[in-house]
Image (cartoon, rainbow, N blue to C red):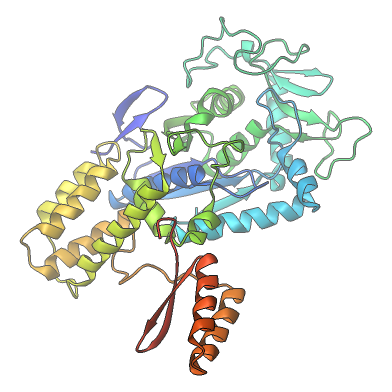
Length: 461
């Protein structure tokens, strides 16, 4: 039995998909106006393990993820600027250009973390007609009203509003959850379609029955998820920050439109802290994949670190912890690769591992079982066979003999060539100066009988 915590019911439930063995799973993807950060990546790594665990249990998963490339405003009150337009102005590019750039960067980073690509990736801007259609359905059913800046969903017409977040709707005061828009009937009401401001030509805007504008963020996910998975599906994933607004609004508009249960199981990841503090621009502690690699870390060390804390617990990221994770992962790989070719397996270990995963995805416990296998007195070939199987879920590439090589920049390559030339000319002092320059750039040079070996210096180096 696979048990999974359901945010909707606040308890661990036996997982029972609508059409076994098929499972429909939707993940809230990135808003591609900037680089994804390590908090996002922790969520996607855990979602990846959820998918792998389902498949390990014999389910056939259809995984859908959206790319938000329009409509995500800077305020939950449906005010402020579209993040895509803001990002475009920041970089002097078009919104379409930054969408393409950051979408590509996101999936490159995901690949480095060995996160499987969703079966379907859908961009919001490709689904505008479908979104308009859903809004029209809601309008016909009496859930929509219009004010100066757009069309809004009337939450008072939907009795189950707030059930995911357990919100006290009657007691919700203006400003308690979102800022005040005096024209809204209720502070929780949210935008389905926003009108382009008068006298302003947006880069991303479309014709609609109500005027030129763009969709609200929430309607995008409801439309794309149901387009690909049906009006009701099994699992919706995201971060806990999505519970009180985004996912609450998705439920309201989806169930109001279809009259059916939207999602059976809601899977939410807790926050990632950095050095014990919430990530914020003011603290300059928002790190992305480039920051990890520039400090000399294998991205797979970040994956290992993320998996050592249960997905429903807050996790504290530190560079010291990442350093320890890299060493631990390297140590584990050395053990595994020393076992040789896999032959046979260790059934009891595999059963314990599956039991841990099926206990609300207890991955830290599952990793502990792997380490007990390392120390256990089984034939090495059998241990190799079992690890090869279990790593299909962890996705740590444990059979890789060493961490991935990190590319050396062009400037560093030129300095290395210069240093090699100085050494051949026996100009040792000057060669040492170049070596120190490389060290300042974050590269450690080790001279071996086979020649110079270069690696990137870690934060702890």
